Image (cartoon, rainbow, N blue to C red; front, side, top):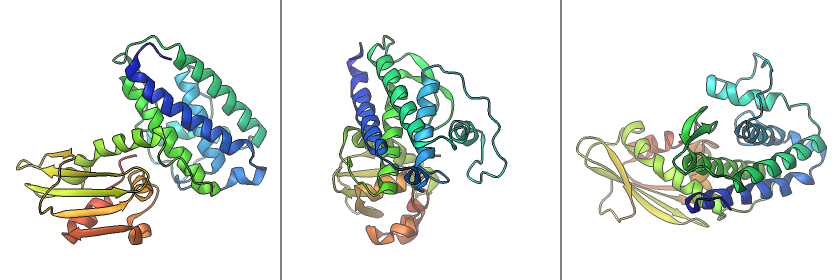
Length: 277
């Protein structure tokens, strides 16, 4: 238990997803580590390597000294390059090496979090999903719970072992995604002033939210019902999370998304739906 109750929900969500990932990968045979995930360019091994690498950096371990190959197509900027080093350095590790390092890293980080004495507002280092930066500790832990849940789902889909769509990490992820909706609608999709876009999500994590664009083009999100919205988008939670995490293109899940209203605006919102880099 941390010293600050506001941090504990994020620690609990992180712990649950990390332990679920550990259970998922412990029994994998060597070939399964190479299975492709929806995370662009990454295999099962790569996703686990990424999680290990991030947690090691947050523990204060030195970053590996490693030169990336020039032909990794999904490395497009300094943020992705930073993250790829921890992945590429482990690409030839065996399954037992991966599971052993993951377990050891989980034990170390869990101990660190149990002994956390800093305040929720303390500025700390963060790594993902938006690159190295300073963040309040509470925000860092929220993003860690978010990141590991999204990657847990990457692994579950790759291994055909669905589950935990309604876990604590799923609810943290919902909140992170919802915080990005005003930008998606008002700025990225260019919704006109004085309109509303409704998101109706069903399934294990169920919610309805309205993004309202004011006369100055600024967006806000709330849970009140909108009468006569410009667009209503209805989908299940898993589809919402895949789209918002940039794991799938809108056309690939068109049969799972129902749209009403302005077709052009609906298309623009879906085109810019991903809130992760």
